[in-house]
Length: 503
Image (cartoon, rainbow, N blue to C red; front, side, top):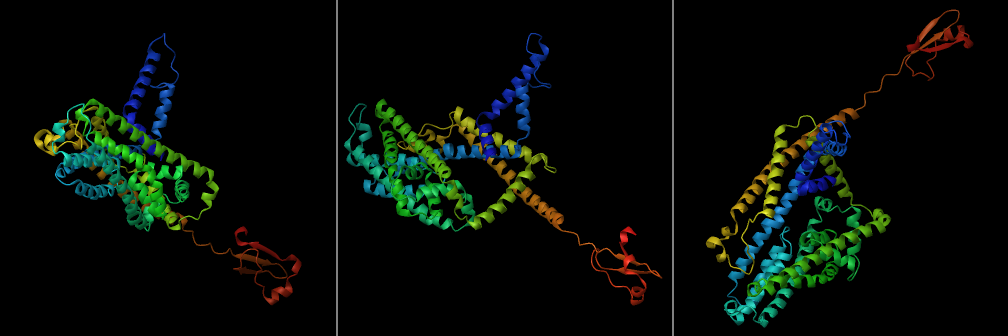
């Protein structure tokens, strides 16, 4: 977990902040040594005391793990915030243009089917679907009343009533889509996936947090904690998880109903995109509504995290006493052994780690982080919304959406992903070989040597004559009896028995 935190800090500002701090520390130390009117050096070496402490701490990091996890954050940002969002906008703009001549009822039915398919894709959130719904359906209702409404409506004119009717339709369609997606994802995906041990292990079904989540969601009716989880959680993962936990579907649908205001706000934001060219007021309303929708979604997510943490702390003893999933425990033990082998085997301080995997993962991390930074500081794509037509793009094709700097971002993304894939394949192979070697070493160390033979016992019987008998009995056990003649001749009070090793 902490490697993910370190990787996030490194991915965010660490690439620049850490080298900058160390460079300033070295400059400070050099000035203290060279200039007589400054403070004396507070530590030996090239860095100040604080710089030396940071450098010593950085040297203890598992850099192979941290750098590898920075690629995770980069890919998550690029896929969700850049590539998917652009593709979703283009797709729904194409759908809006293709459905412009259909009746509103047909448009609602087709959009419902397409939107449901979009909900089934794990990486696509629900908000872009709601925004597109708010743009496509009101455009259809206004086109049914007046095909030339966009040309006839001037800035400052009253918004046609068909627009508001279309927004109501869009909100209802979006709400129905959400509930249908919850049912399908929970029953058809989550409940079936729950039969697989690896899936139950992936959601950490034995953890206190997941047990607390299950405890909250099992509460009947509508309550704040339950609704915060169902509304604030990501769409696909939340619904699938409820299916894996085998929760009641009707209760989950009931707890999801408070999402209606958020859907209404998102569809309103999409509908305002149809009107933003008719006045600055509508553009401002779009920004405000979008921000309020984002704020409400974020607040729901934070509330969900708060209630899960509070429940796991308040009922820790009861949750810990619940019987665990034994299959998951066994799977987790095997997975923990493999993860430890991968962590130990890929550590740069381990023997036998070649140079090329280090160069590969560093290059992948730099390329993916560079793509993220460029997508923020540069204009990589043409401004485009679902209310526009693809023919409005440069060249009249979808490729006109991407500017030259956007192609650079796409190239860095593809190259960084390929290098990361190569490194991951090497890391898995390295972990397997490391695990096999560890298993062999453990079996050798656990093999106990055969027990040594019992020491021989030398019995000396002193009498008129001296006879020596060698017994194979263990030391301390009754020895074999001497011959009858010796027994008769030897006084019993002078018999001596000694271990062979002492003779």
